[in-house]
Each structure stands twice: as C-alpha cells, then as structure tokens.
Image (tube, rainbow, N blue to C red; front, side, top):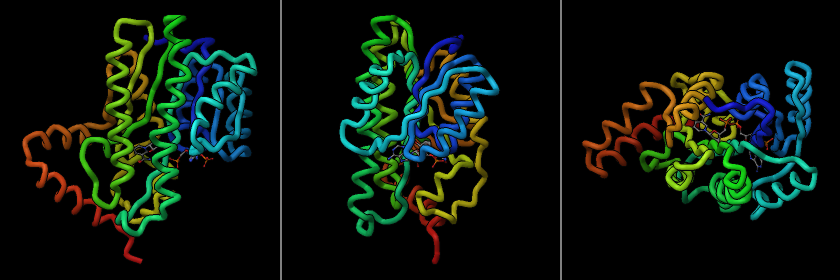
Length: 263
Ligand SMILES: NC(=O)c1ccc[n+]([C@@H]2O[C@H](COP(=O)([O-])OP(=O)(O)OC[C@H]3O[C@@H](n4cnc5c(N)ncnc54)[C@H](OP(=O)(O)O)[C@@H]3O)[C@@H](O)[C@H]2O)c1
C-alpha cells in the first residue's frame, strides 16, 4: 500500500471536482498538500477545511497552468518555499465541446497546453527528485475519452489519449523503482467539467467524484499503469477491439452528437 503519511502532494485543479476529492482523500491519509488552480478563494476554503479536519499543512498557489512552461516555474516556486514534492496529481484540465471548425483558437490552444503541456512539464520537473529518493507517486488524470477519437470533442479526446500513453510509458520507465505512475481514466463524473465544456445536455449517469478517487488509490496500491473507473466504462474499450476504426468513430460521433446542446 502506498503510504501518503507525511508526504507532500501537489494537486493541480484543486479548486473543484476531482481535485478537491483528491485533496480530501490524501489529507485523510496524512499527506501535506500544495493546492494549485486559478481561483484562490476556493483553494483557501479547501485548505482551511482540511487543515482543521486533519491537522495537515496546506499551501495554496493561484496559477494559470495553461501558460507555456508554467509547470516547471511552479515546481521552482515550490522548491523556493523549501517544500519537497513527493506526490503529483496532474488533475487540472478542461474540455471544449463542439465541431472543431467553430472552436475559439485561443481556447483550444489553452486546452492542449493545460491538458498536455502542463502534465509533461510538471512530471518532468518532479520525477528526478522522486527517482533520486526512490519514492513517490504520480497520478495523471486522463479519461475514458482517451480510448477512441471523439467527434465534437476532438481536441479533448486527443489530449487525454496523450495523457494515457505518456503515463503508461512512464510506468514502464519507473516499474523497477520506488516511484509509481498511474493514469486515471474516469467516465462522466459529477463535477463542474460539463459546465465548463459547454455540454449541458450530458444527462447520463454521473459517478461520484469520491468513488473515482477511491478507484485511483486502489489502483496505485496495486501498481497498475492505468485504471478505468466503473464496470460500464471498462466494457467499451474492450468491445472496441473487435470493431473497425470506422465503426468506432461513427458510433462515438453518434453518442457525442446526442449530447450536443440544442439551443
Ligand atoms: N468530470 C468528468 O466527467 C471527467 C471525466 C474524465 C476526466 N475528467 C478529467 O478530470 C480532471 C478534473 O476535472 P473535473 O471533472 O474535476 O472538472 P472541474 O470541476 O471543472 O475541475 C477542473 C479543475 O481544473 C482547474 N483548471 C482549469 N483550468 C486551469 C488553468 N488554466 N490553470 C490551472 N488550473 C485550471 C480548475 O480550477 P480553476 O478554474 O480555479 O483554475 C478546476 O480546479 C480534468 O483533467 C478532466 O479532464 C473529468
């Protein structure tokens, strides 16, 4: 079992959704936290709650991680505060919903930069110290969107395919060390994600964020390279192995089109 006790975990996207649940779960296991997102007020509220509940140390840093190299600058800032990062949860991310031709170019550039660039940058900055100490954990939040192209969610799905591939490759690089790397692939989960993505029509069942985090921590204990939350979500990637690429793309397009807002 991975012991978070007295370790320090950097959690990105800790002002909402899965990030807050990661913060709660790790604080309950005795981890000190560095919480990062743009909305400082929310980070402060989470920090105050967890400090008083669990007596852990919590540092908050307001940062826009979609800026190029903001991840390594963040790790430098944390080092200047004399904080050693033992665990990284690369969780900050967002999706843009709709046909690519109509997307705002700045917004999709930020999407790629946050969902992909910051994950690589933060991981590259944190990993050497973990390897030197021969202990540490990195959880990168991918998605079930990683397993197939998603028309109307093209950029988002591609960023998550990157996160899954990147994380599993790093699992291979670190397998025989004390460092664990995991890609977490949630399906639809009740957070602010779909409000931000602009897909109000996503009406299917949503997992509870706390369940998703429990799945991640169990998989980390088992040293899995990746984990998909939920039995239903695990079925699709398995079934898709037996279908043609065309069939997979068309089916996914139909599912995503159903979820397009009609207004
Ligand atoms: N919910 C789902 O159905 C679902 C499914 C699969 C995967 N995921 C993935 O799960 C992760 C967490 O998302 P969530 O569902 O918890 O959504 P959420 O509630 O919208 O949370 C997203 C978090 O990312 C932060 N963030 C967004 N842009 C940022 C930026 N430029 N710089 C720094 N932080 C930024 C947000 O904080 P600020 O706005 O304060 O910056 C927020 O804390 C994402 O990677 C998402 O792709 C979600």
